[in-house]
Length: 174
Image (cartoon, rainbow, N blue to C red):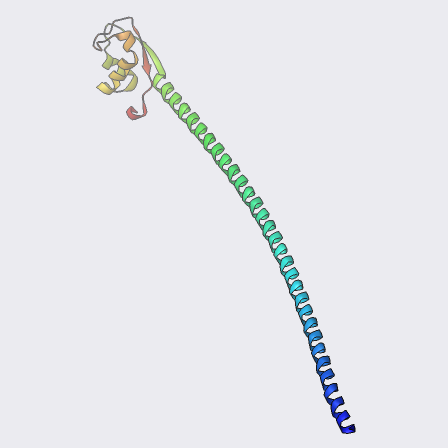
């Protein structure tokens, strides 16, 4: 019976050992599951924090990009305004130069080098020869056109006593 008791103890002890082993295994499984859950939670927290940091970095980058874009647009507006200002100034200078040129041309056309009182022996060609050294049509017609209001519609009729203005020669006749 002692043998039976030892066998019973062995069997009974084996069952207790199996139960203890099963219990230990369950405890290990429970701890493993708990550790895995904590690891998953920690991983999720890390991912959440990384996502928040990435979103924050993206927001900051977007803000910096918007500021840079705004700065570039401001600089472009300033450049356009400056270019328009320079263009307007240039156009004003060109207009002023053109006005001076036209005034100079008008003054040159209206420049009088002498006055001549017509005598009975004068003709426009004689007057042109006297003042310009040429009696050709280009020269006496210049005198006529300049004095058309005094001479009248017919350049061949000049009257003694008329005072004619002798214009300066234009560049093409000099």
